[in-house]
Length: 207
Image (cartoon, rainbow, N blue to C red; front, side, top):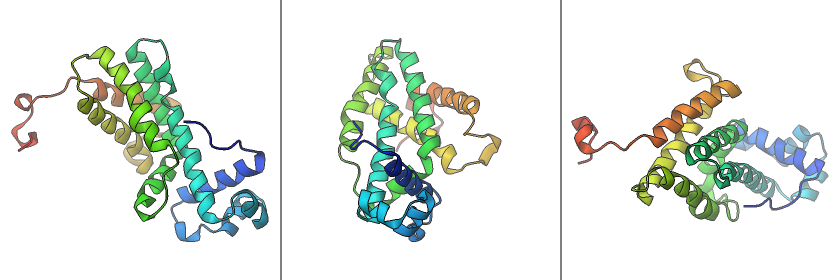
């Protein structure tokens, strides 16, 4: 997945300001005027580059999606699969820290008509997932595609959660050292052998 448009300095400031306001969580106060004030530009500049608030929000979503897609790049390497997956988990954690609250907002608005960035869903479902699948199958050739998809969902959710409850549990997800350690914990769960019904507590098994 590639960046849709090159960013000049003003355009980038406007996008970052839109993301900052989105991350603060009050969509009703997200106006073209508010975006312009946060970016230190006039309203005409926002309208020139984006045309409307809706377009600025949509392009901010696309900007975030590109950063998340870049997290998959370590999986293209020639390193051993466990190392590739570890770098992927850490890259995804960094993207979450940079954009976690904004992406949570964007995802929550998809049912309200906010369009997903062109190509992003296709990238995640096809190319991105194929990269994860390839690395995982090198470690466990018997794994199924559905199992790896479930593991990837758990990994992604676990990496996003600390940003959504920022400051809880007494560790600072914004610190690289803490983030790297947490990513290793999550990766260990991602790579752990699957439990069978016979090894799970009775209340945890599926009906």
